[in-house]
Image (cartoon, rainbow, N blue to C red; front, side, top):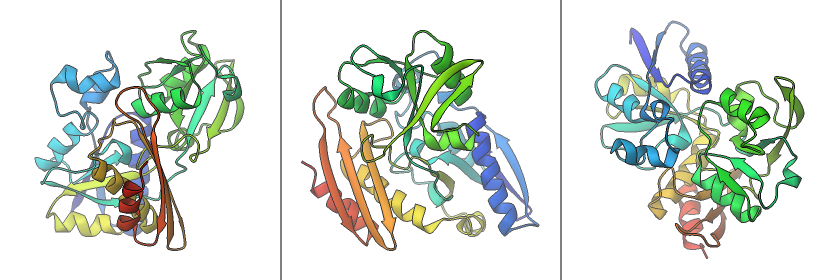
Length: 306
C-alpha cells in the first residue's frame, strides 16, 4: 500500500488517538506513508442539544452520532481506517464495516472533577455529564444529585468544572484526561481555580463497555489495510472489549443505553461485572461472571443478571 489514510474526528482527544495510531503504524511499518483525514461528525456539530437527543434532532440512527461521517468516508474509500473511541462504536456494525483491531487499553475508570471533593457530593449537588450511563450511576450512588447536561471537548468541560457556577463538578473518562496530560488524582488549578480530581473505582462506578480503548475500523474485505491493522492489535484488550461488546449485543443495547460493565484478565482468567439500569427510574440489575473464553464469560454474565 502506497499511502494509508486514517480518518479521525477533530477534537483534541480524537487527534491524540490518531497520533497514537500513527505512532504504532510507524513502529511496525517505518516505510509506510500515513495520511490523516479530519472529519467532523454529527455529534461534534450538534452541541446545541443534549447528546442523547442529537440523533432525534438529526433524524438519524441513534447509535452513530460520532461515527456516521467516518463510516461514509470509509465506504467511499476516502479513508482506509477509521479511528474511534471504542465506546462510541455500535455493538453490531453494518455489513460494509469491520472492527479489525484495538490499541492497548488505557485505564477504564471514570473521574470526578469538581469544586468540591467527591465525598461531599450529595442531594442537590449539580453534576455535569452527557452520558445516560453516568447520570444513572450518579443517581444510584448519590441519591438526589441534579444532572446538568454537559457538552464540549475535554478542555472546555474542564473549564466548566472549575469556573462555571452551574456545575459543582463533572464526570469524565480517566483515559481521555490522562491522554491529554491532565492529572487524575489530587488537586490542581484551571485558570487559578482549584479543582478536586478523583478516580472512581470501576467496581463501584461501572464504566462503559469499551471505555479506554481505541478501535480501528476498516472496510470488510479490505485485506491490504486489514493486514496492516492486524499488527496493531493488543490481544488482552481485544479479549476484554470483545466480551464487553458481546454482553451489550446479548442485551440488544447500544452506546447510549445505561449499562456499566467491567472486565479484568489475569493470565487467561477473565472476570466481569455488570450493572444494567432500566429505562425508567429504578434499581439496576447486576451480575458477575468468570471463565477463560471471553464470549462464554459474556454469555454467563448475561445469564446471571438478576
